Length: 301
Image 1: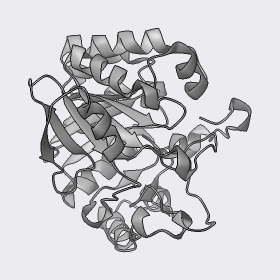
Image 2: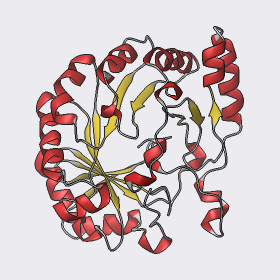
Image 3: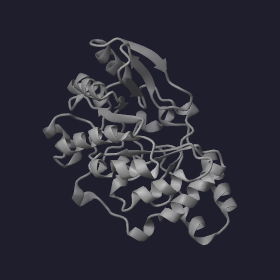
Image 4: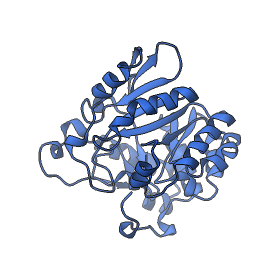
């Protein structure tokens, strides 16, 4: 997150209502979307988010609803989310050291987040995964500690290469710890069995030889997987993104609020997706100055 004084909050009228999100989700499902993940910003800041989960899980044809969260409110919400039909949860956790955690998140909340992870496991949210962005010089010395932590709880662990979407503006290529480096570090202590990367999945996955836990690496920068990406992202204010690194945002809100015709939404969505960029592996900012997309805190995890 950027410094709080630099955050520009949207008026509540700019945000989609639960009715609007449900309607759009029904349209997406009618077009072939099978899985939904509720992200943010931070989704558990949204009052009554469990009601949204309940609405979405009631949509015929939708296979699953999962959530990505920073974990701060997860402990108190885990059971009601499970009862509402949430399948699994992914918690963003970038350090197991309180000082580092506070530095990157802006809040000394590590004990609370760790308790939330334990509570999510207890109530049976599954799959339960931890996402950790590996940053050279910040937390790359904690890779094995993170593995030990995840294996102790028998939950999945995903390491993500550092992308230029941080709100602090500290990204540069030298700070990237590649997926291959991460796997080599883990292999120095554990025997891994490769499972590969499924079509349109983001993570290349390894199992531990003893069957406890699972390791994934998301190689967005060193080995982009753009060619078979089929994911769409809907922002809280109704913008459609077909790529995290796109700078074009296709606003669904005018159609949503001024038309009762779902076919108009389907047509606009179809036209927008056809404009999907080639992906991060082809983007010129890798080699030269280029307009950066939104920060991840404004797009969603």
